[in-house]
Amino acid sequence: MTFSRKDLLTGGVYIIVGLLYGKMSLDLPLGTASRMGPGYVPLLLSLVLALIGLAVVVRSLFAGKEAVFGQVPWRAVAFLSVAVVVFAGTLEGLGLLPVVFLTSLVASMASKELHFGKAVLVSAGLAILSTAIFAWGVRLPVPVLGPWFGY
Image 1: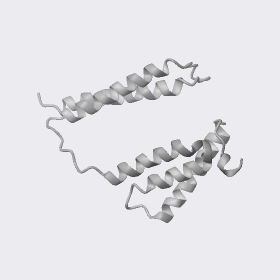
Image 2 (image 1 turned 90 degrees about the vertical axis):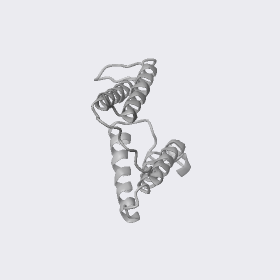
Image 3 (image 1 turned 90 degrees about the horizontal axis):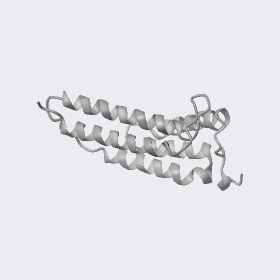
Image 4 (image 1 turned 120 degrees about the vertical axis):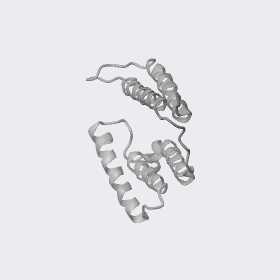
């Protein structure tokens, strides 16, 4: 039987990470579907991650031959990593609206094909939509504009 070692290992990592985070989320109150506690969504997401890992493992058993790994898109890896750090490092200081705009703009630089003007428009739309949904709709306790703006 021939299987894809790369997919088997990837699925295994997904399963392990999903189960570890799932176990950690059990330390938080889960609540119910109508009154979610802080552990509810992390538990669901970790279970989805583990299920995706299981699907990748099963698929790896029927792959037939080892897949060739292509060239690593280092530009995308770098800009997406920086975007995550920007979001985590500036959310409390800038607030939701500017940090989503800035994070989206940095993440859009991962693609060589997206022009800067279009990236600014998409980032602005995403920032406004995210603020409307999370700050005003869901009432997430995150300031729209943070203390770095004097609020």
